[in-house]
Image (cartoon, rainbow over all chains, first blue to last red; front, side):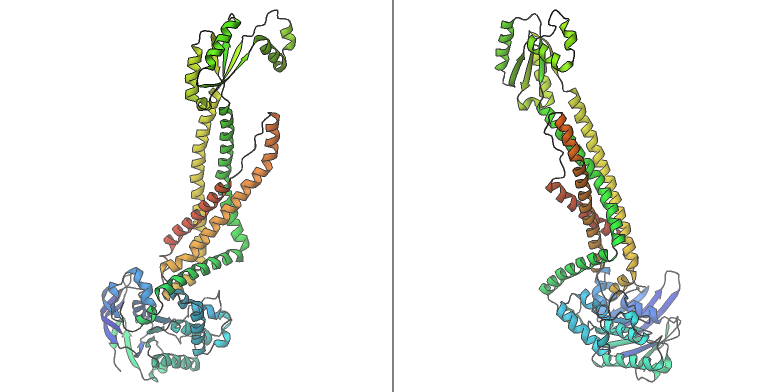
Length: 220
Length: 322
């Protein structure tokens, strides 16, 4: 589903964020991406999202070589992917429901379908009773769950998460992890970046470990 | 796009559905951008007021010009040539000339003013009645007023006619009082050029105002733009709300400009009619016609849209998710 072939990425500043990465993530797999901060986890996710382009090598997502995609094709590519951020990127000028509905509005669903799917996603993360609230009134854990609901509402085949539990206590973190596992169980390929080894080592999933932009291990 | 996997989910949304969704989205964004304007009434009103003033200036100038042009046309329409005849000409010779001229195809009407009539008219209008009493002899010649047919109101043709009339034997002097009309028409041409320059300059101003307003709006909605781009919003989708904002700003500015011009017309038309009355004229101040008003709104809307488009294309690329 996600394949990196000898991928290097250098920022304009000259800093090499990733060097010669090769690995493969199967369809329906759940994989943790670990390493210290600055090891290149976020850069790797950005390549998959096409927020950055590799300076070398190729990234293949869903059988599509991303190097071949034009700028105008990026939106279609991103619609296959749900993404969750540490700081959730929620919009505080609208309700929880409107935040979650955004990907569906963009994809052009009709209003009934938007309502149905948004409610379903909210139900999944246990926030159906808060749909009319402004996300700013929610707790950190709840905000993160809204972010997850938004990432999965359009039923992407790939779910990326960048330190989704970064600001949460262990109990809430475990809940969030459980949510990701549930999505994985229904067939979503999940790639989750986290440096919280105590949390993820309890969960039996493959780990890809980075150090200074290089692959340390990509094994079970 | 690959046929397997998730791609299929997107293709569930058929083309006709997409078209309907597109129209619905246009409506949603159009409404949403109006709501945003109304949500900040003071800011929006100030922007709209600035735009409307910038538009009202050239439009007001244009209305003034077309009024002056109208007036000029009226005078043009009453072009006449006065033939001052030789004082020694006999009545019979004058009658012959009159008959001769009346056969000319380019002449619509002739009025012969004999010496006595001319004197009476002069006394009545000049205020020199007392002076004239002391003259033994009537110093005024017989005058024939020639009114050319409408086709000859055009100044060149009128001049040709003037030359022809001047060559008539009894005619001492032929006078076409049109030089000032030519000056007026030249001045109108200058005025039109000025109006054009004003339109271009102030349109540029409107573009800049709207561009800047939209730039601020983009800045305010930065987070939203980034999120939209991250969840697969196309450039068109991101651009749409700002284009609508620009359109509304322009349109509202245009409507307000037409109100300003209408108000000015209302304030001026009373005094102008009184003035025209003093000149025994039924002249009425022309305002903006229905068609002009619609064009103004259309142009203003387009200006707004285009200004927003310029601003969005300049600033959108800066807002890539990083």
